[in-house]
Each structure stands twice: as structure tokens, then as C-alpha cells.
Length: 157
Ligand SMILES: CC(C)(COP(=O)(O)OP(=O)(O)OC[C@H]1O[C@@H](n2cnc3c(N)ncnc32)[C@H](O)[C@@H]1OP(=O)(O)O)[C@@H](O)C(=O)NCCC(=O)NCCS
Image (cartoon, rainbow, N blue to C red):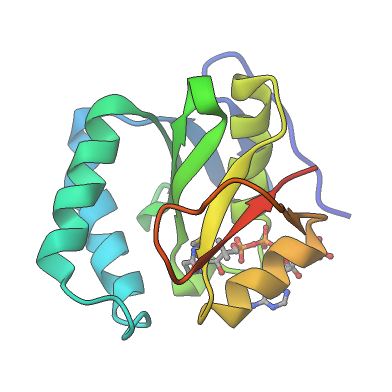
């Protein structure tokens, strides 16, 4: 069983795996963008990396960004939360760190910050992410339109 410890300085830490979750520092920005670009390489249906980077920077300017950080690897995951809407605009975990609880850890901390079940939009083509969200108890939400036409709006537990 994975054991988490909630600490005051860190929002969450996974002692065995050596990563922690905390709020973003400006020094994290290169790591966030590098991770984002690496992940986007597996999203061939997204049109332009440059446009996606613009969207990322806009979301970082207005949202709360959580960082999953490991001492040697640096930024291994991040999540951007629009707290008033309890809406997650970005959630990305580095390939090498998937299936280690990083994604569910980020979502759990964001859920606590929002004090409300979260929502997000997932690309219809993104079947691995859809499987992950289903495993975490997310369900498709009928009603609100997703941000983009080829997405599905999901609601978290
Ligand atoms: C989707 C993503 C965030 C999941 O992050 P992660 O750190 O691997 O997730 P976790 O390790 O916390 O796994 C949470 C649960 O989902 C399951 N899961 C994760 N990825 C899965 C996959 N590809 N297929 C099936 N189940 C999966 C895990 O087994 C776990 O289930 P469990 O609690 O029953 O054991 C990550 O795969 C990712 O960054 N993908 C690329 C970017 C992306 O698609 N982001 C989502 C945009 S909406």
C-alpha cells in the first residue's frame, strides 16, 4: 500500500519514492514547460506546440500550480487548478513516473485546495488518461460543455 504523509511545508510527500508535492516556484517554469512538451509529443491530434505553450503560460498566470518534484529528476509532474471553478486545466506526469501515484497525489491535493469535487476535460483520443480517471473514480459529466470540441468533461470523486 502506498503511504503518504501530509506536511506543512510540502503539501504531500511520498517518502518511499522520494517525491513531494508543493506549490510552483518561478524556478520550476523551465521544468514544467519541458515536461509539458515531452508529453505533448504523444498528443499528435493537438495542432501546434507553440499554441499549447501559450495556453499553458496563460493558465500558469491565473491558476494555482502544484508541482510533483523529485530531487534528482526535478519536476516529474504538475497540475494547474482554477480554484474558484474547481477546474483542472492541466495535469501531466512524466512517462518515467507514471503508475507511481503522482497523478492521483496531485489530484488529491488539488481536491483539498478547491474544497470541492474537481472537473476537467480529457481529449476524446486520450484513452490512457480516460482509463486512469476511471480507475480513480471519475465519471463523465452530462451538461457543461468542455473547453474544446473533441473533449469530454469529467467530474472527480
Ligand atoms: C493520466 C496521468 C496524469 C496519470 O498519472 P499517473 O501518475 O500515472 O497516475 P497514478 O499513478 O496516480 O494512477 C492512478 C490510477 O490510475 C491508474 N492508471 C494510470 N494510468 C493508467 C493507464 N494508462 N491505464 C489504466 N490505468 C491507469 C493507476 O493504475 C491507478 O489506479 P489504482 O489506484 O487502481 O492503482 C498520466 O498518465 C499522464 O500524465 N498522462 C499524459 C498526460 C495526460 O494525458 N494528462 C491528462 C490530460 S486530461
